[in-house]
Image 1 (cartoon, rainbow, N blue to C red):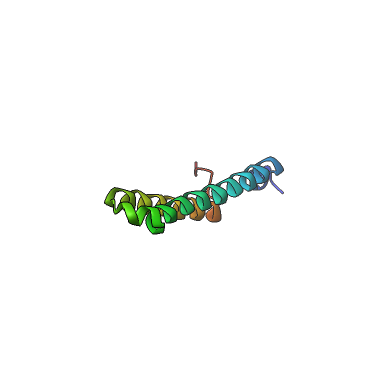
Image 2: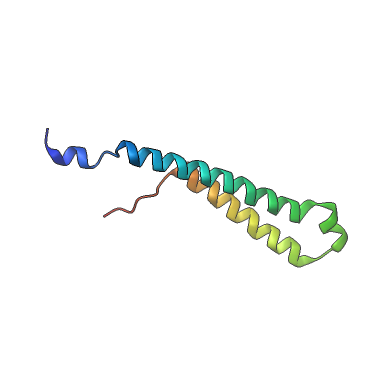
Length: 80
Protein backbone atom coordinates (compact mmCIF):
# COMPACT_ATOMS: atom_id res chain seq x y z
CA UNK A 1 0.00 0.00 0.00
CA UNK A 2 1.28 3.38 -0.90
CA UNK A 3 1.21 6.35 1.40
CA UNK A 4 -0.91 8.32 -1.11
CA UNK A 5 -3.87 6.00 -0.53
CA UNK A 6 -4.10 7.06 3.11
CA UNK A 7 -3.95 10.79 2.38
CA UNK A 8 -7.42 10.79 0.80
CA UNK A 9 -9.09 9.18 3.81
CA UNK A 10 -10.27 11.55 6.55
CA UNK A 11 -8.74 11.05 9.95
CA UNK A 12 -10.44 10.84 13.30
CA UNK A 13 -10.01 14.56 13.88
CA UNK A 14 -11.59 15.36 10.51
CA UNK A 15 -14.55 13.07 11.17
CA UNK A 16 -15.19 14.71 14.55
CA UNK A 17 -14.98 18.14 12.91
CA UNK A 18 -17.47 17.10 10.22
CA UNK A 19 -19.86 15.71 12.82
CA UNK A 20 -19.78 18.85 14.94
CA UNK A 21 -20.29 21.14 11.95
CA UNK A 22 -23.09 18.97 10.67
CA UNK A 23 -24.89 19.09 14.03
CA UNK A 24 -24.39 22.85 14.19
CA UNK A 25 -25.73 23.31 10.66
CA UNK A 26 -28.82 21.22 11.43
CA UNK A 27 -29.49 23.13 14.65
CA UNK A 28 -28.99 26.54 13.07
CA UNK A 29 -31.09 25.52 10.07
CA UNK A 30 -33.96 24.51 12.31
CA UNK A 31 -33.61 27.78 14.24
CA UNK A 32 -33.65 29.93 11.06
CA UNK A 33 -36.53 27.91 9.63
CA UNK A 34 -38.51 28.36 12.83
CA UNK A 35 -37.93 32.11 12.89
CA UNK A 36 -38.98 32.36 9.25
CA UNK A 37 -42.14 30.38 9.83
CA UNK A 38 -42.97 32.51 12.84
CA UNK A 39 -42.58 35.71 10.86
CA UNK A 40 -44.70 34.48 7.97
CA UNK A 41 -47.57 32.61 9.65
CA UNK A 42 -47.89 34.02 13.17
CA UNK A 43 -51.00 35.95 14.18
CA UNK A 44 -48.93 38.92 15.31
CA UNK A 45 -47.39 39.23 11.83
CA UNK A 46 -50.82 38.87 10.21
CA UNK A 47 -52.23 41.66 12.37
CA UNK A 48 -49.38 43.96 11.42
CA UNK A 49 -49.93 43.04 7.75
CA UNK A 50 -46.39 44.18 7.04
CA UNK A 51 -44.98 42.89 3.74
CA UNK A 52 -41.46 43.42 5.08
CA UNK A 53 -42.12 40.79 7.76
CA UNK A 54 -43.22 38.30 5.10
CA UNK A 55 -40.20 39.01 2.90
CA UNK A 56 -37.81 38.68 5.84
CA UNK A 57 -39.56 35.47 6.91
CA UNK A 58 -39.16 34.07 3.39
CA UNK A 59 -35.45 34.88 3.41
CA UNK A 60 -35.08 33.17 6.81
CA UNK A 61 -36.88 30.07 5.51
CA UNK A 62 -34.65 29.86 2.44
CA UNK A 63 -31.51 30.29 4.55
CA UNK A 64 -32.71 27.68 7.04
CA UNK A 65 -33.28 25.17 4.25
CA UNK A 66 -29.80 25.94 2.92
CA UNK A 67 -28.21 25.32 6.33
CA UNK A 68 -30.04 22.01 6.73
CA UNK A 69 -28.95 20.97 3.22
CA UNK A 70 -25.34 21.90 3.98
CA UNK A 71 -25.45 19.84 7.18
CA UNK A 72 -26.81 16.90 5.20
CA UNK A 73 -24.19 17.08 2.44
CA UNK A 74 -21.20 17.54 4.82
CA UNK A 75 -19.04 19.01 2.06
CA UNK A 76 -16.75 21.14 4.25
CA UNK A 77 -13.43 20.67 2.52
CA UNK A 78 -12.33 22.33 -0.70
CA UNK A 79 -10.98 20.16 -3.48
CA UNK A 80 -7.31 20.96 -3.98
